[in-house]
Amino acid sequence: MKTFFSIVSIQTNPISSEKLVMGVLAITENEIHFDYSKSKLGLLDKLAPTKVGIGSMAKNALQQIKQKVAETNKALTKDQQQLVFAKSIFSKDYISYLNKYNNGILHFTEPTSLPFDFTAEKFMQYYYNFVGETIAIETKKEIVTFAKKIKPAFEKEGLDEKADLKFTFDPFTFNGILKETHIPLITKNGAISAIQIVDFSLGEQTVVHHLYETKIIKEALNVFAKKANTTVKKIKIAFEEPIQGTLQYDLFDLSIQNYKDDFDFITPDVLEKETEVICNSDNIKFSEFLLTLES
Image (cartoon, rainbow, N blue to C red; front, side):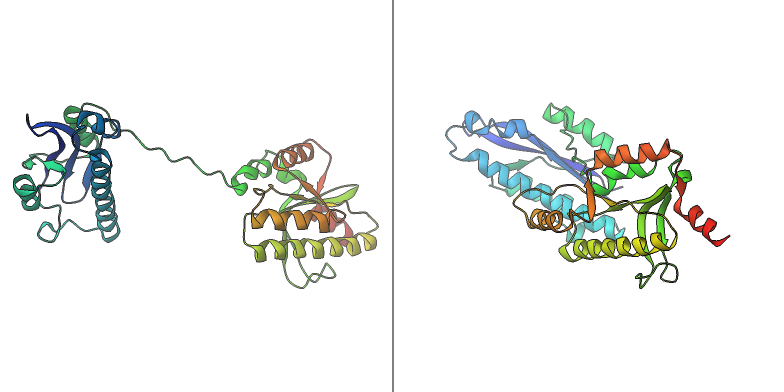
């Protein structure tokens, strides 16, 4: 196993040759590990006042290494291959060369071989031993999409017993429907009621198509309701207001103005309450109502 590591440091005092350990570079055949201290980076200008701009120069150099490491690891993972040291800057010979002849801002120790399999956990331990601090784990904030926000509203226990979820309108039963068209929820309790979803964060054409489609569903249900001797409530459209000043918000605002008399626009919290009410109601599935008309 070709595994070795090198300590990355920066000289803060050329007279005494004092160096500040900034990071650790560890290289295996299948993955490269590298990280550096952001806190020490912020102290460089104070520790080496004679070296003007050392902090920004060091940051640039360290970030370049980290970016190259990320690119190399991505390529290794994608191609499921091992590192070809002869063609890589992350070879033991090249790191040794940097140790002897590099006059740049970063200093690399002579690479040291390791006699065991190296892991991410071991790298964290080595980093702590040499840098003197733990690696700051970068956590990406999960982006909660509109679809994720409203998903629980349609997953309530018993809801599928009181309403059709993802109901399909077929053109042979509903006048005005030219092809199979879907709606997330439809139910009946006296009047027919339905819930549509429109995600205004999507592309303009997608949003407009969805609204036009819902208008067609509304008209088809009105025609159907007259023949079935029943009524239809306004279709409720669940939405999330886009950020003001964006093109999505302009489309949203225009949609509200043009369709406020046709639909009831409801927010995710109202949607949550609506499906809860249906779960605790005497509603029946719309599909069950259709079966009573056939008998």
